[in-house]
Length: 77
Image (cartoon, rainbow, N blue to C red; front, side, top):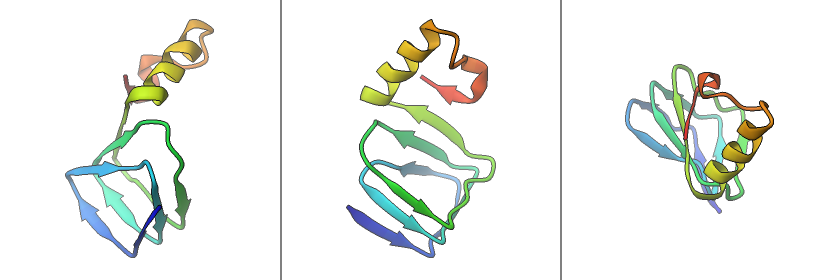
């Protein structure tokens, strides 16, 4: 797992899987999550958009069948 520490990013893409984020700020970014492990400590994601891929995408589809996740929840699947 790659450690990312004290990073400040405005815009762009951020891959969440297999990263350990410590004291970072990602503003107005596109966050991509595929279902692998990650750790977030003291990190914020203001105005970011979430894109679910692979296993995370399939899990969201499964939860949507039961009304637990809606497209309006801010996830792009």
